Image 1 (cartoon, rainbow, N blue to C red):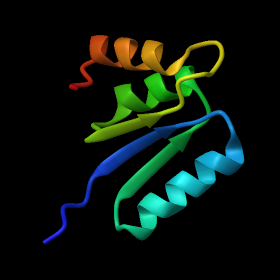
Image 2: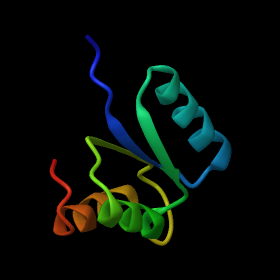
Image 3: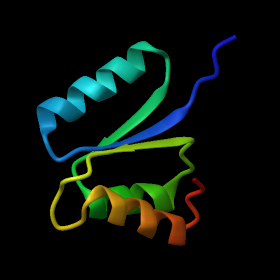
Image 4: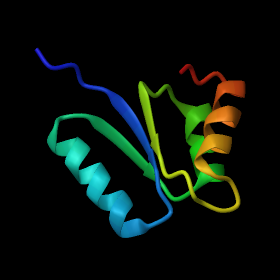
Length: 77
């Protein structure tokens, strides 16, 4: 049996974000896509995610900053 994961996709390129979200949804995962760091942190505060897939090069927060701030908000790695 395949486990359904709750996945957060953080990507500032809308076309790429949509493609990644679509692919993960086709694999029967629950996916939330956001356009950058601040939106990712809001999502992390609202709900639990099993996995975060993030772009590394974004502004004003890069992917590593998103993960560090997420950990401070209870995101486990």
